[in-house]
Length: 71
Image 1 (cartoon, one colour):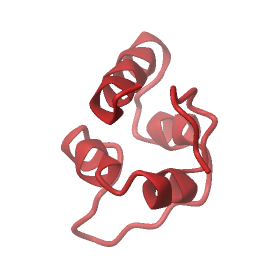
Image 2: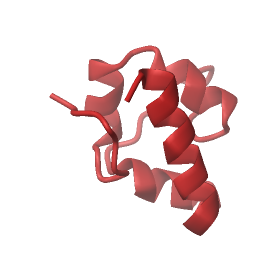
Image 3: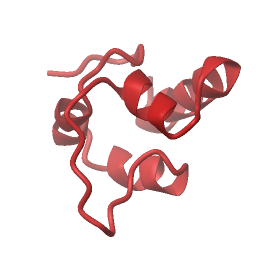
Image 4: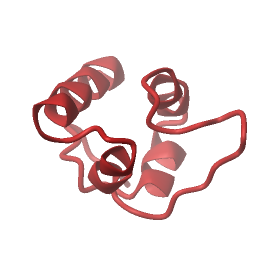
């Protein structure tokens, strides 16, 4: 079970299982692609880094996701 607030260390597959509505939010912010059925097995921070979202940009993204999820 994924607890809020998120820290970035959460495994993406577990995060999406626990919070299915996060998929659309992450897709809208170019972190995951829901249209292509992309699967990623690793932490959220690592996936964001692969997309070039690091440092302050990642912290802002994480804050927005936490707010969206009600943390």
